[in-house]
Image 1 (cartoon, rainbow, N blue to C red):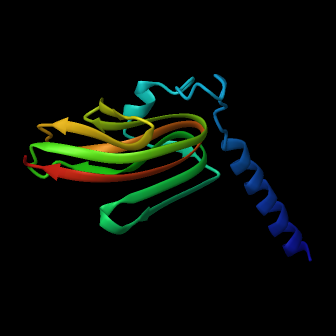
Image 2 (image 1 turned 180 degrees about the vertical axis):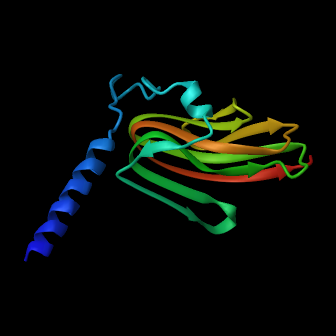
Image 3 (image 1 turned 60 degrees about the vertical axis):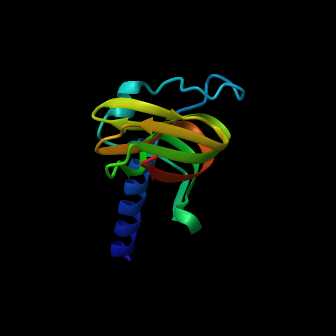
Length: 156
């Protein structure tokens, strides 16, 4: 009996520590303004991911499309890496639907934001003369969103 009580007490203590460290960043600039209020460019280009989310799912779909969905994402998360593969142009085709919160989606390389991926349907973002590896990152403040994207390499 004492062993069970000790296990339950330890579990509750661990749970309370975890819950205290999971702080979401509130959307303080209103429903119509989806720009970031607290997170900065420095947070985005940092090499480490620091985020919390109620739920998050990434799945591959037909035709090389990737779907990422998240609920209440707060912080910065790297969705994936994008490689130039000696292409003369990288094209990111995306559809981003923001349900709530604030969000900025960026392509980052060597500590710099190379491009922003805008919200909307069937948007193309082009990177001319790409080289090396890029990180596709989402910075969110209590952001609930769905993003479908496909990366194409073109040699014209």
